[in-house]
Amino acid sequence: MCKLGKKSYGSGYLAGMKLGDMPLVEYTRDRLHREVLRRFGPDTLPESYELTTTYTPGGQLEQQHLNHPQLNREYGYDEGGRLVRISGPQQTRAYRYSDSGRLTGVRTTRPGLDITLPYATDPAGNRLPDPEFYPESSSRVWADNRITEDMQYLYRYDKYGRLTEKTDRIP
Image (cartoon, rainbow, N blue to C red; front, side):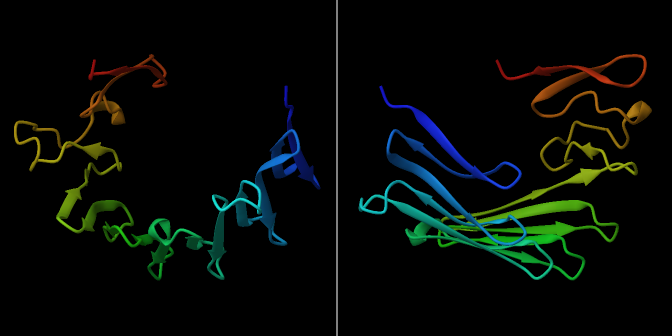
């Protein structure tokens, strides 16, 4: 039976894992301990993957390139540092924000698809049901600043306002 082993350095940063003598994954990090290269599988196999990650000067994720280009991603940010775009060969997601910095919508495009999902919020920033998709909803604010339901879940709180139960509506 092969033993799963891990390799770490410094104060416990994971540098790799192997099964017996076979490398499963290896990580290369920069001086700030951010992952810059992830290698899956042994170098000698044609199936091995390498994921290269770069960062902006401000430390935000900038690009992720895999040696199989169909999975590459590039990230774009506005002047305020908010994520505004994630793009790759197969699809692009564009994010919109209000003047106060709240997410107001996401547009996903790819061949044969162009969909925009709007996000509405109350003054406290809680998400509200979108009137376009839920015209029967009259919610404009959440009582006591606590969300009681959304498309997928029902929420319950204790007398101190702590979430005590989250029930999935989808069986």
